[in-house]
Length: 186
Image (cartoon, rainbow, N blue to C red; front, side, top):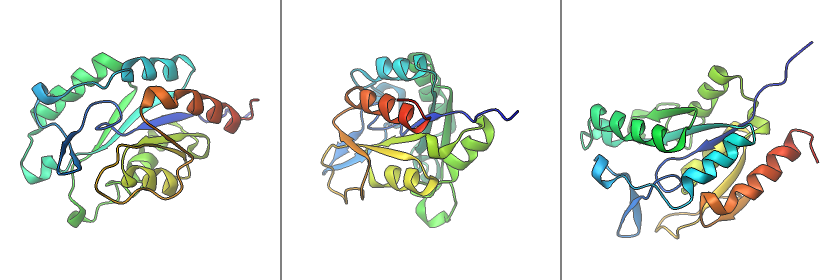
Protein backbone atom coordinates (compact mmCIF):
# COMPACT_ATOMS: atom_id res chain seq x y z
CA UNK A 1 0.00 0.00 0.00
CA UNK A 2 1.46 3.36 -1.01
CA UNK A 3 0.96 6.42 1.13
CA UNK A 4 -0.05 9.67 -0.47
CA UNK A 5 2.55 12.41 -0.49
CA UNK A 6 1.88 15.55 1.50
CA UNK A 7 0.56 18.88 0.28
CA UNK A 8 2.29 22.15 1.08
CA UNK A 9 1.79 25.86 0.80
CA UNK A 10 5.12 27.44 -0.05
CA UNK A 11 5.27 31.03 1.13
CA UNK A 12 7.66 33.74 0.09
CA UNK A 13 8.69 35.67 3.20
CA UNK A 14 8.98 39.39 2.39
CA UNK A 15 5.70 40.81 1.09
CA UNK A 16 3.68 37.70 1.96
CA UNK A 17 4.28 37.20 5.69
CA UNK A 18 6.09 40.39 6.61
CA UNK A 19 6.16 43.90 5.22
CA UNK A 20 8.73 44.58 2.51
CA UNK A 21 10.58 47.86 2.64
CA UNK A 22 9.67 49.60 -0.63
CA UNK A 23 12.07 52.12 -2.13
CA UNK A 24 11.57 53.65 -5.59
CA UNK A 25 8.78 51.15 -6.24
CA UNK A 26 10.96 48.11 -5.51
CA UNK A 27 10.67 45.78 -2.49
CA UNK A 28 13.60 45.11 -0.17
CA UNK A 29 13.97 42.72 2.74
CA UNK A 30 14.34 44.06 6.25
CA UNK A 31 17.95 43.59 7.35
CA UNK A 32 17.41 44.01 11.10
CA UNK A 33 14.85 42.61 13.53
CA UNK A 34 13.58 46.11 14.35
CA UNK A 35 12.44 46.53 10.72
CA UNK A 36 10.74 43.11 10.58
CA UNK A 37 6.97 43.67 10.78
CA UNK A 38 4.40 40.93 10.28
CA UNK A 39 1.63 41.81 7.81
CA UNK A 40 -1.94 42.09 9.16
CA UNK A 41 -3.69 38.72 9.00
CA UNK A 42 -0.57 36.76 8.03
CA UNK A 43 -0.30 34.80 11.29
CA UNK A 44 -3.99 33.88 11.21
CA UNK A 45 -3.71 32.90 7.53
CA UNK A 46 -0.84 30.51 8.27
CA UNK A 47 -2.80 29.06 11.19
CA UNK A 48 -5.79 28.41 8.90
CA UNK A 49 -3.56 26.62 6.38
CA UNK A 50 -1.91 24.53 9.09
CA UNK A 51 -5.28 23.73 10.70
CA UNK A 52 -6.46 22.45 7.31
CA UNK A 53 -3.56 19.97 7.36
CA UNK A 54 -1.15 21.63 4.93
CA UNK A 55 2.57 22.04 5.48
CA UNK A 56 3.62 25.70 5.48
CA UNK A 57 7.13 26.21 4.20
CA UNK A 58 8.83 29.57 3.69
CA UNK A 59 11.12 29.75 0.64
CA UNK A 60 12.99 33.03 0.54
CA UNK A 61 15.77 34.63 -1.49
CA UNK A 62 18.05 36.53 0.89
CA UNK A 63 20.93 37.86 -1.24
CA UNK A 64 21.77 40.41 1.48
CA UNK A 65 23.71 37.56 3.14
CA UNK A 66 26.05 37.26 0.16
CA UNK A 67 26.32 41.00 -0.38
CA UNK A 68 27.18 41.61 3.29
CA UNK A 69 24.15 43.81 4.02
CA UNK A 70 22.95 41.25 6.58
CA UNK A 71 24.70 38.69 8.76
CA UNK A 72 23.54 35.16 9.50
CA UNK A 73 22.93 35.88 13.21
CA UNK A 74 20.40 38.59 12.34
CA UNK A 75 18.74 36.38 9.74
CA UNK A 76 18.42 33.57 12.32
CA UNK A 77 16.90 36.02 14.83
CA UNK A 78 14.37 37.17 12.22
CA UNK A 79 13.49 33.57 11.36
CA UNK A 80 13.19 32.56 15.02
CA UNK A 81 10.74 35.44 15.43
CA UNK A 82 8.85 34.36 12.29
CA UNK A 83 8.60 30.75 13.51
CA UNK A 84 7.36 31.92 16.91
CA UNK A 85 4.68 34.17 15.36
CA UNK A 86 3.45 31.81 12.62
CA UNK A 87 4.42 28.24 13.50
CA UNK A 88 5.57 27.57 9.92
CA UNK A 89 6.95 24.08 9.42
CA UNK A 90 10.21 25.08 7.76
CA UNK A 91 12.15 28.04 6.38
CA UNK A 92 14.45 27.54 3.41
CA UNK A 93 16.84 30.30 2.36
CA UNK A 94 18.79 30.99 -0.81
CA UNK A 95 21.63 33.35 0.20
CA UNK A 96 22.96 33.71 -3.34
CA UNK A 97 23.05 36.50 -5.90
CA UNK A 98 21.83 35.98 -9.49
CA UNK A 99 25.46 35.95 -10.64
CA UNK A 100 26.16 32.88 -8.49
CA UNK A 101 24.08 30.71 -10.86
CA UNK A 102 22.73 28.45 -8.10
CA UNK A 103 19.63 26.31 -8.57
CA UNK A 104 17.97 27.53 -5.37
CA UNK A 105 17.52 31.24 -6.19
CA UNK A 106 13.97 31.85 -7.33
CA UNK A 107 12.74 31.80 -10.10
CA UNK A 108 14.59 28.49 -10.17
CA UNK A 109 12.71 25.76 -8.27
CA UNK A 110 15.60 24.34 -6.23
CA UNK A 111 14.23 25.28 -2.79
CA UNK A 112 10.84 23.76 -3.63
CA UNK A 113 12.45 20.57 -4.94
CA UNK A 114 14.59 20.35 -1.79
CA UNK A 115 11.54 20.81 0.44
CA UNK A 116 9.67 18.15 -1.56
CA UNK A 117 12.43 15.63 -0.90
CA UNK A 118 12.76 16.55 2.78
CA UNK A 119 9.04 16.61 3.58
CA UNK A 120 7.71 14.05 1.03
CA UNK A 121 5.64 16.68 -0.79
CA UNK A 122 3.68 16.24 -4.01
CA UNK A 123 4.51 19.49 -5.81
CA UNK A 124 1.67 19.08 -8.33
CA UNK A 125 -0.78 19.09 -5.41
CA UNK A 126 0.86 22.08 -3.69
CA UNK A 127 0.82 25.88 -3.93
CA UNK A 128 3.39 28.69 -4.13
CA UNK A 129 2.43 32.16 -2.82
CA UNK A 130 4.58 35.17 -3.60
CA UNK A 131 4.62 38.87 -4.33
CA UNK A 132 7.17 38.89 -7.15
CA UNK A 133 7.54 37.31 -10.58
CA UNK A 134 10.45 35.22 -9.22
CA UNK A 135 8.13 33.48 -6.73
CA UNK A 136 5.52 32.65 -9.33
CA UNK A 137 8.21 31.48 -11.76
CA UNK A 138 9.67 29.12 -9.15
CA UNK A 139 6.24 27.70 -8.33
CA UNK A 140 5.42 27.17 -11.98
CA UNK A 141 8.82 25.57 -12.67
CA UNK A 142 8.20 23.15 -9.78
CA UNK A 143 4.70 22.28 -11.05
CA UNK A 144 2.79 24.01 -8.23
CA UNK A 145 -0.32 26.14 -8.47
CA UNK A 146 0.59 29.79 -7.86
CA UNK A 147 -0.88 32.78 -6.07
CA UNK A 148 0.42 36.29 -6.71
CA UNK A 149 0.10 38.95 -4.01
CA UNK A 150 -0.10 42.16 -6.05
CA UNK A 151 1.54 45.33 -4.75
CA UNK A 152 2.20 47.11 -8.05
CA UNK A 153 5.98 47.02 -7.74
CA UNK A 154 8.01 48.74 -10.45
CA UNK A 155 9.00 45.46 -12.08
CA UNK A 156 7.58 42.90 -14.46
CA UNK A 157 4.42 41.16 -13.31
CA UNK A 158 4.41 37.35 -13.27
CA UNK A 159 2.98 35.37 -16.13
CA UNK A 160 -0.31 33.55 -15.57
CA UNK A 161 -0.58 32.96 -11.82
CA UNK A 162 -3.59 30.85 -10.83
CA UNK A 163 -4.88 33.57 -8.49
CA UNK A 164 -4.11 37.23 -7.75
CA UNK A 165 -4.94 38.88 -4.43
CA UNK A 166 -4.02 41.74 -2.13
CA UNK A 167 -2.83 39.70 0.89
CA UNK A 168 -2.22 36.16 2.11
CA UNK A 169 -5.26 36.46 4.35
CA UNK A 170 -7.45 37.36 1.36
CA UNK A 171 -6.30 34.38 -0.76
CA UNK A 172 -6.57 31.63 1.88
CA UNK A 173 -10.10 30.64 0.72
CA UNK A 174 -8.80 30.16 -2.84
CA UNK A 175 -5.78 28.18 -1.59
CA UNK A 176 -7.94 25.87 0.53
CA UNK A 177 -10.41 25.27 -2.29
CA UNK A 178 -7.70 24.70 -4.91
CA UNK A 179 -5.63 22.35 -2.76
CA UNK A 180 -8.73 20.34 -1.90
CA UNK A 181 -9.52 20.11 -5.62
CA UNK A 182 -5.96 19.03 -6.42
CA UNK A 183 -6.18 16.29 -3.81
CA UNK A 184 -9.31 14.87 -5.40
CA UNK A 185 -11.73 16.45 -2.96
CA UNK A 186 -14.83 18.34 -3.97
